[in-house]
Length: 242
Image (tube, rainbow, N blue to C red; front, side):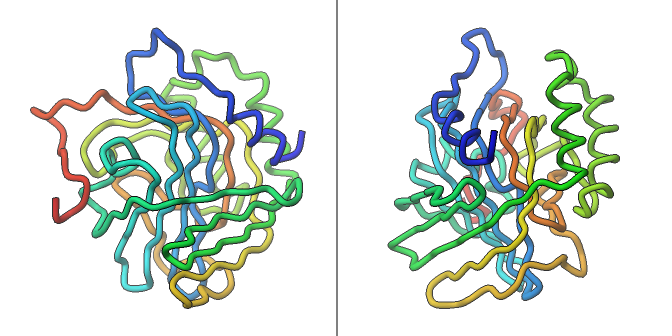
């Protein structure tokens, strides 16, 4: 299937009823850096064990400031895990459409934000997808296997260093499961009238806690797991100011 078909199928995803971790299923652009220093990320998780499904857009400006946007409140969204590294949060309408099988468009009307990304398969993504399709389910939570996968995938994809498990800024441990992937072939984005320019790797790879932002845009279909929030051990900041 093509990316759009997987994305549309993901809209009916469900979280297992016996799942003990905070679990999410759907798709997203793990991260896309621009030569200008801007960085974008997108999450669409129709299935969430902590609340309603949601959209989230991540933006880092050239000065290193992270702002997150979501169509649900912060602690039901990505800020629940990344808030300690995020300067600002805004709840706003987010629209994602798939006008073509390999092209997605994300928009936030109130923020004058529009992001178009064209995706493509490569020999590396085809290899990773073929291996992922036959990998036994228990291995998707094996840190040993995920560590090997990340070390291999980063150079193969030209994405720099990748990590599929580790500690989020709010101190919860996470596991990421990119079960199908494509790379971003081209992209244009603007926010509040500012064009972000052409995609390109950063001089220093961006990260949020142990989660590394790929140096090349990668769209993933899959899910993520986090430790259940424990206020005695984890931070509960939705943003650095909260």
